[in-house]
Length: 119
Image (cartoon, rainbow, N blue to C red):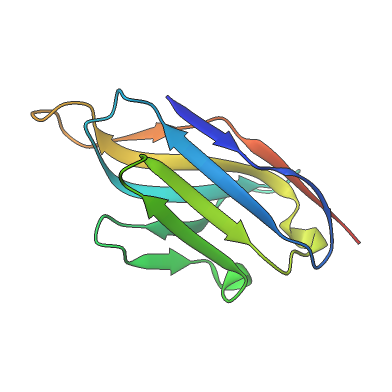
């Protein structure tokens, strides 16, 4: 299971840190990603981090958001600074992982956490 937390209500310019904790069912986590979906809009990939530590960001959050991971804790993070009202959305975490040494890598989704940025 994936447990996302850290969402909430914040004023524009504020910060939030999202966490995505993976339970012990995962043998190895390859990639971690955060997606968001605002009302009436399609879900979009916000940021991703691969097992080698390389990262990607959607242009709208570059310079404001930072994705990271703690492999020892099987946890991914999304530090969100300088938040804007347009960042308001449900944020969900996704991992690509193996559940055993011999299994293939598959995507797994955590539940969403609401982020609301007031102007």
